[in-house]
Length: 466
Image 1 (cartoon, rainbow, N blue to C red):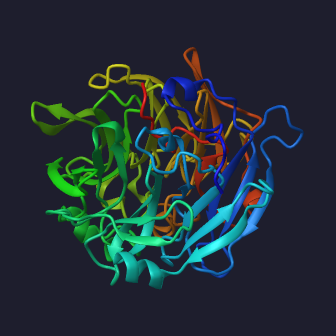
Image 2: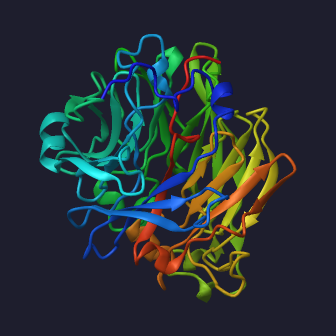
C-alpha cells in the first residue's frame, strides 16, 4: 500500500537513523529441529517501561512444517529514499521469511496487529525454482527497486547459488538477479555500497555441503567458500573475486559501512583450518581494484580434557571461536563479533576500520564453559551468542543462541536449548541487561535464530545520504 509521505521509519542518512526512537517490539524466527511441528515468528516486548518487558507477547505459527526459519527481513527500508528509488512510498510493514530447508518464502503483515503477524502470501519452492532457478533462500535485503533474496543452491539443490529478485508490492518472484555471474559459485550473504552501484556477496557452500552438518572431509580439504565477490549493482555483472585464502573456511556475514561515502566493510570468517582461529576482514578499494585485509584474529581456546569436547572437534583438543555473525552499529563505530563456539560476544571500536580495538566482551554459553546468564546464575547454558542485532541508536544489542539445526546438534550434541539475551552498549560499558532473558519454555520448544526490530535495525537498512 502506498503512502502520501515516506514511512517515518525510513531515514535519509545514518545520522538521522541514530536519532530514531527506541524499538518497542522484536520479531524472532524460531524453528522446530525435528520438523514435527510448525516453525513460528515470536514477538518479544523490548520496551523497558512495559510490565511484560522481556516476555514473548505474540506468536504466529507457520502453516506447514519443515521450513527451518533462519534469516528474514523487512519488505522495505531506508533505501527507498534513494533519489533513483522507484518506490519511495512503500511501507515497512511486511516480514519476508524464507524457510532454509523447505525453500518456501512466507510474507507476514505486521501492520494491523503487530503482536500477531498475519500470513498474506506464500511463495512455494516450485515458483522460486521456476522463475529464478534457485532454492534454499537465505538472506533478505530491501533494495530500492525490489527485494534481494540470496539462495544457497540452484533449482536442483546444488550450485551455483545466487540472488532472486522479488517485487516490493506483489512479492512475486521476478527472476534471477545475475546477468553475468562470472566465476561465482557459492553463495551466502549479499549487501551493497548502494550509492556506488557496488554489490558484495559471500560464500558458505551448496545445500549438500551444509544441510547435514559440517563435513569434516570438505572442511579439511578446504572446499567450503573462502572468497567475497564484487558486482556492478546496476549492470548485475560480476566484477572481481577476492580470495581470502582457502585456509579461511566459510566467509559469511557482510557488514558494509552505513555511511554511503565510505567504500569499506567487514566480513566474518568462521574458522581457519590451520589453527581453528576465526577472523574478521575489512574489504576496501586499493587503487582501481578491491582488496581485503585481516584485521581481527580470535584464537581457539585449548581444553585440559579433550573428552569433554563433541566428536566433531575432539581430535583438535581445542574449542574454535566459530565466528558465525558480526554486526556493525549504524554510526559505524562498533563491530560486534559472535563467537558461538567459545560462548563469547566481543565488541570492537572500528572508528579506524583497519585497526579495530577491543572494547568489551561478555561470556554466555559455550561448548565447554556453559556460562550462565546473570539473571539465572545456576542455569548452565548451551549454544552461544549467535545471531546479533543492534538497535538503530546502537545502545541495545540482542543475541540468540541457535545457529542451524544440523550444526547445533554437532557442536552441542546434548542439546542447544533456547535463549535470547540483551546487552546494554554505551561508550562506558558493555553489560548484560539482567531484566531481559527469555529462555526455555518461552520459545515453546523451538530454537530462536534471527531477530528483527520493529522500525528497523543496524542490519536492515542502507542509506543514500551521509
